[in-house]
Length: 308
Length: 249
Ligand SMILES: Cc1cc2nc3c(=O)[nH]c(=O)nc-3n(C[C@H](O)[C@H](O)[C@H](O)COP(=O)(O)OP(=O)(O)OC[C@H]3O[C@@H](n4cnc5c(N)ncnc54)[C@H](O)[C@@H]3O)c2cc1C
Ligand SMILES: Nc1ncnc2c1ncn2[C@@H]1O[C@H](COP(=O)(O)O)[C@@H](O)[C@H]1O
Image 1 (tube, rainbow over the protein chains, first blue to last red):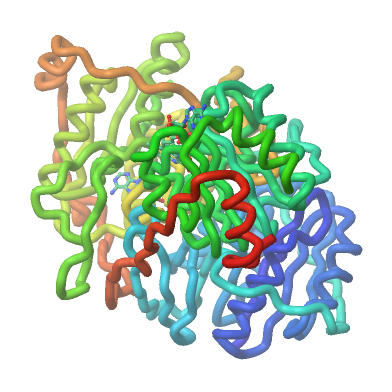
Image 2: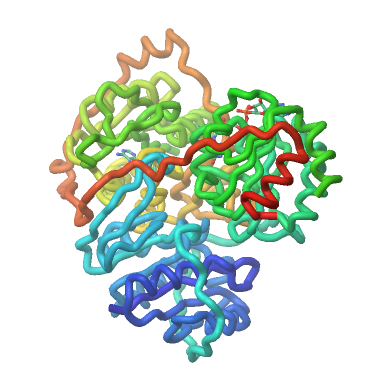
């Protein structure tokens, strides 16, 4: 068996998710190559070469792969997929955008959001917002899979794998990059944070999210939100946790003013310890919370910050 | 410009599903079904393009059992002009759906195809991307804004780090994210009118597409049940528990 892992990049740097995808690849077994594609991605390639379990890193560094647009990335993967039995990517917005194209062009199915490897052809994945776990077996010659990071512990960084250039260049006249508005934050990435504190509609407005800042600072936490909070314009979309947002599984998740709709739970119920702060003692979030505190968040948050 | 919209019949998003006792699948008997929420947003976007004078015709298409015609009628009530039902009782996976939609695209030659980003039953998030690959058309996935401008469309996408805007040549494939628009409700007179709008029924065989997939569903289980814990009475007690019991502080 041989596996190609598409590296996840964040602003040109190697994203943390890649180390989780390699862990999943190790469970499948066989040689693991990593593809780093983009423009000016040499540093990302060197970071990938350090990851344990990597056999070699292949780098496609060309302007046509800048911003990892779907059309050239899909075409590149089709060119490179040839000898591999599995192609994996993280279930990030890039992985989700690109990998199904490879699957379709190879006339195989894609398994999305895999959370466990049973064997080289049998995998577990959540369906129905995580309310059921399906075990699926693929008889396709090439297995195309996106990996949910929270299902696999990241590999370490003691490796020094060879890095080789890929000179495949494809044409793309169909899509072009216009602009990006990326949230600038000094906080840890939501997906990788050990502690996450999220606010919901109960926060009332965007200004009040500042009440979470001091606590997040003290705990080294990332800040998340429910969809209701995002929809109401309190905070940007990249903070959404849930079935259709980000999936997180930190050691500690603190839900503040969040009712606990199944779509929100889908994104956080695998957290180790869940704390809920809500004024409604019947809120469904308490059914999954290890520690529930009933009360007004506007009184509780300042007190919590001062006592931490 | 013609706009093609793909809609899927799925479990209503408010329903909590149950797994069958024999673990063969989830139990959908007597469960409320509805149009996939992302598909409602896709229909709404297409109808708005028509109201703006950009689209001339909106065609809704679904792949599924006979009952899926209910969702096509909903799309017609919301403003689609006609519908295509590709009828099959088999479990149609994303790849098969994408192949069928590619045939419809070939036949109908739409300027824009709008799909949901994800069906909330299988949570696949792949059909639109597969359709784009098969038709050779560019894709704008997870759209929170779609702006048609002559022979181009600018799509603003919800990505992990924030928002990204890309420009695509038309025809193009777009998949919707939640904030693209707020779908309207169908009014009673429109629901009545929808009954008279044209609805073509086809089969996968008409398009020469094999629905069977090489992926088999071996087992479906409930996730590990998470038990509710305790209520604490104060912030002090919470901090104490987190430090000394859960040991996460
Ligand atoms: C297709 C689809 C996908 C979706 N995907 C997601 C997703 O990925 N993520 C997601 O989060 N949602 C998602 N949703 C939305 C989801 O169904 C809920 O609507 C949403 O999670 C509710 O957010 P909320 O808990 O913040 O708001 P609400 O349900 O309105 O709850 C607000 C809570 O705040 C509490 N509160 C109010 N004031 C105070 C106060 N002063 N002090 C303490 N508590 C207070 C209230 O008691 C209440 O429990 C999706 C929905 C659909 C249809
Ligand atoms: N059976 C189907 N019939 C019509 N459209 C579908 C079907 N399955 C998926 N789609 C479309 O593809 C989108 C994404 O679905 P998926 O990739 O399966 O998560 C849906 O929101 C629909 O727009």
